[in-house]
Length: 498
Image 1 (cartoon, rainbow, N blue to C red):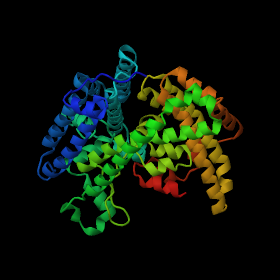
Image 2: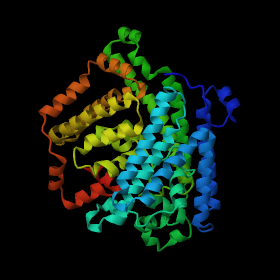
Image 3: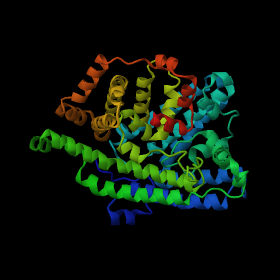
Image 4: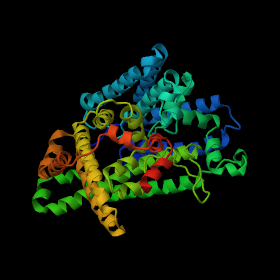
């Protein structure tokens, strides 16, 4: 893939880019995110809901977001407004009954059009900072909002799942509210996605009250006197960002992923060394995403967004819109556990707009939507098609094998060690095409491993029986089904405990 030499945004920071030998697009992105972090503290302290009207907060958040987009991407940032404008037009001029479907097609179609032109009309990987990245987050927000409006205005309460009742939007947003939700400075560059109701509650100053009542009701309304401070969590997340960036810049430079298909490397190293190298390479690649998502989370927290109640020791939790749990990723003992803790808000979006609503083979449909949303590089489709097979195999193994290892702590430990190794190996194997992008290199890698993970997974799916989703839902107690549909993270903790 060609090295980026072009920048679509401002050239103001070009001297810094040359000094540290990094592409200008990346420098612009990082500087804008740190500017957003500082601005977020100002936004929380000086434009607090108790001092400022929601209108002013919406206007400031939107204008700052559009400025950062223009600084990073230049005129390409207009795509953000075009995509948002097209979808809003569909919401206004189309009947509510089918509006969510039309919005989904228009928004995802425009995103795909931009991804195609960027990848094939201009150049393969031309820009290091991709203007379609923010559009991916805006696509999530628009489509989520369309389904939430449809649920709120068209469906009866008894036909909604508990999570859908919580998310349902009961009135059409104004244009300002809509643009603020899509393009605010806290999430315009890297997200994360959040629900429209949560964002509006944050802007209007209603964000803390329900969480205080849930977790700290015994204090008789003291939350009205002082909001919990995010300073401690923001500092921790910025430190995590610094460590992640250092690991990525140092280790991934030594262990680049594309070496796994180098003929000399493959010929001169035994297979177990190739496996170890692949694991280290992927271990060093993930901190790039840890840096981007953790910094985005810190920006939202600094602005006062993301409060999620209190821990057992009384300290505030700021993980409502967090996008990852690093330790749960690195020590995941199942493919599902890995996915549940990686890009969490995207996983929730896929669940809410596809998995819960698709009548036929929702697992395959969800992986296919994820591939389309990510872009048009063939490697994405190879990764997500493989992910379908691995997911089905992992379910079959868990359903048929896990119960035999729960009799004692030592057996459970053995099971966890084995499943951790298999999970990490499978993830590394799956993700290689996602990194290499092209068909030729991806197939070269799979053939060098004799596609053995594909074959093993297919064999497990064919040999081991597993109940359908509908059968399992019929057998589950009603309370458990509600928990699985709840937007509250507490349900995930209950599942882990079992």
